[in-house]
Amino acid sequence: MQIKEKSVSAQLKEAVRDLYDDYAQAVDDQELDRWVGFFTDDAVYRVIARESHALGLTHATIYCEGIGMIRDRATMLERVAVFEPRVLRHFITGVRIHSASADCIVASGNFLIIESLFDAEPQLLMVGQYQDEIVSTGGELRFKKRDAIYDQYRVRTTLVMPV
Image (cartoon, rainbow, N blue to C red; front, side, top):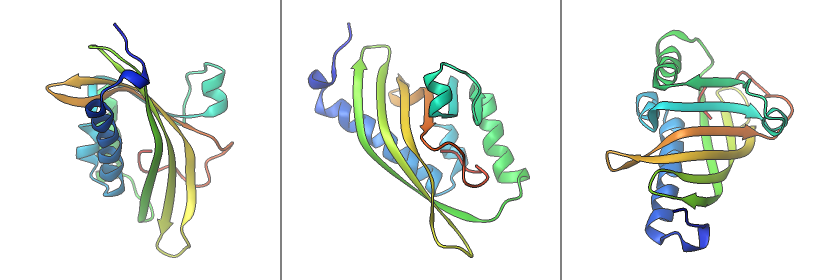
């Protein structure tokens, strides 16, 4: 049985909001080992253009299928990749639960990400919407599917950190 947003408990709304906030904090603090822990073993994580998403296309700027690919991305960023140091700040608004059942929560939220590089003024990195499928695993909420759907037609700089 599914329930709609208006009948979702305040406790579930708070738990989903905390999940979004904790996720953003892990990325902003560049705690990539912690970031990996927000996903289920069979998770799909995509950063995808709005146009591609609307057309049902599956190619994405970042595409990870399964925890192995997500973990590889984190490991690559921490140990292998060379990029200019940066600070990200995620701002998430409009978190909504569209449906919830014993098996899955379908939720969304708007995001704005500001990037600060050492020698430049902070700039808008990305704006868009998360569309998520969330499950409870071991008593904790985790993303089974996370689509970060960005609104702009091009990515301003190299997309380094998770969205």
